[in-house]
Image 1 (cartoon, rainbow, N blue to C red):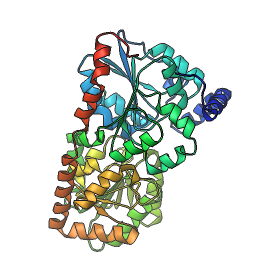
Image 2: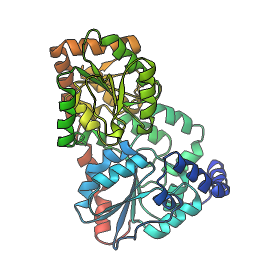
Image 3: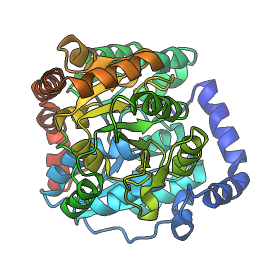
Image 4: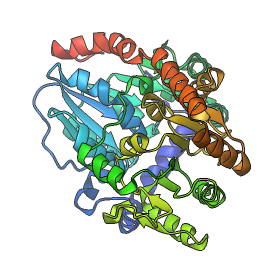
Length: 432
């Protein structure tokens, strides 16, 4: 492979190299905002905090919580073959999930900032024999440096939205150069496969969406019992993985619905837990009483809004609320994952902006397994209708569960596709 990089990638590498002295300052600022753990911040500069295990190592990179959660079953299946796995992520919340859910022969590290020296230092230490990149977290220096060491790279659960596709088309030589370095791209959908192919990926297999094969999110039985006891027989609705602006809409819906549903409790789980305190401020400004789960508080009979600003507890929320609005969809974010609530038999509402999970939402809507709400009045009306009509709510929930179960199978297809690479690793030979 020629090492003559396209102009855009050469410029990127020059800028990222020149910016290296600023990286520690940026990391310190993130640390002060709670976005980097102080005791592990050197990992972001490529300095490992753990020893490399002996033998072959598979490096799997997942950007954040959603991506990591989607590949946990894949990690478990690979780990069962007694292969050492290095898992890298880029957020504090994902590190918490890794600590809780990774198997014993998997090691978590924070991914190095995409500065050439940091990436080289990271690769010098870990010397991975195979690299699996989840979805579309395509950092050029990581890809180029791994390619130069002839580390086989596979894109797992490959996703490329129309928006990302349009942006990359402005830099065709750069994206083609990056994608051709991958041995294999496993696309979620035919649409993703078509877009990856148009941008220059040489070898693509449509394997399906791994998120559809993830088991329902777990929850602590004791915490579930305690929360149910605190709520009692009050009517409950929830908003999960909300983004800025959507909490205000749920708070207003609560204000309008509480006369029709006496004792109504609204659970709000912001996508970014650090925003929990601001949600309570919004509730207070609306004349409502709010409590924060991160403070160890349970709702009281006087609580209107219960803010679940914790990590890894959506399984708890979905087992409490029979109706859930899935966020990131009434604002222009692209929608969050509807699969988990659907698998747990929850009636799902969502807004119009769902391109991150377009195929799944389209399938759910077509099967009447979810309901689209385009604005605040429609959100309020749909919440009221589903709370009042038990049969309609159950039909929506049952259809949603059947739809996502019918779409599963990506895990086995992914394992079949990467089997030759796992075999070569088990035989002690690096794929060339």
